[in-house]
Image 1 (cartoon, helix red, strand yellow):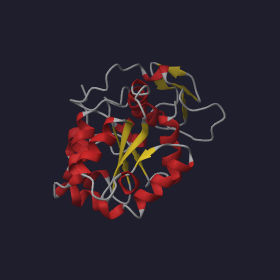
Image 2 (cartoon, one colour):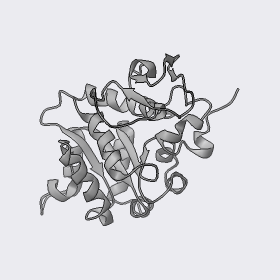
Image 3 (cartoon, helix red, strand yellow):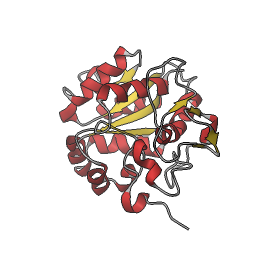
Image 4 (spheres, helix red, strand yellow):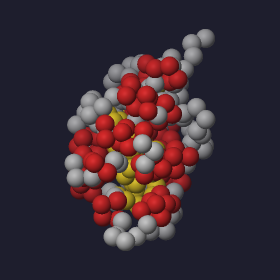
Length: 235
């Protein structure tokens, strides 16, 4: 029987997750990290073809699928692999919906990206009505950064990490970004967004994070990534 390829090759992005002979049919749970109750992907999307056993009739990662959290008439296009990968995160969003004073998203990023890619993603999400915990506006001067991060994580429905060359350097140095990642991974709330780097480079620094499926700006522009994240966290 064919085994999971994540430990050896990673799952790259959600769009490429279907290449794994095991996880292409039930992707969305990383080894050792349960997402709580998990429903068959077929209950979360309607495919452009008929759904058979949780898979699109088109097979593999081709074609398109409509997750049930995507509004009718939305122009955002998902692959079946993306729907399978994002479904457990949607489960977490729904479970954490009753949080007091919640933020939709906790944005984890490298300090060096605060005025560039991280701000771009933040602004795109905010423009779509998403409330984002972002250190540049949520940590006041003179306050404890780690304490504010803890508070931000506690009241956020889901976390995203912007994986860039700068973040990989920070994680290797075991800085603040590394502490954020550890907390997010432990709570199974993490959606990686790979930007200007590769999953191969990520696996060299964090094999666990590199084995998780997410989204990549190498496959679609940042604005499309933001559109999918916005739909994912909207209740």
